[in-house]
Image (tube, rainbow, N blue to C red; front, top):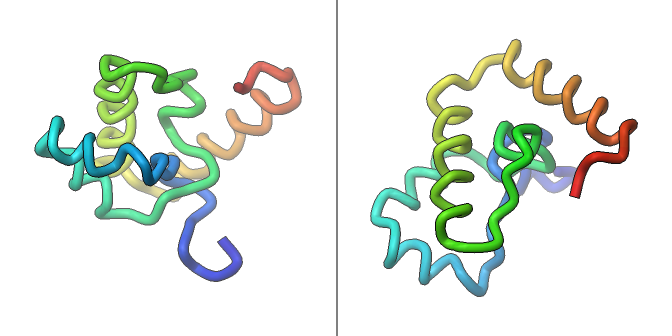
Length: 92
């Protein structure tokens, strides 16, 4: 975030080792690169953690929702809910 490679809010960066596989298996995956990756995002506050391919598809739906509806109000909502998740210790 400090160097400008990431944002505070945005899709969480994917593990580099599986990006090529995701691009091959999910043709629209690269749309996710329209915005900088973030420390927290819509998928994270919705409790989506990708442990299998079905989870990756579900996470992408949330990431695309964020990309298509980006606004300062949505960012504030994500920050607020992220703080609640952290304080409750419900994050993973």
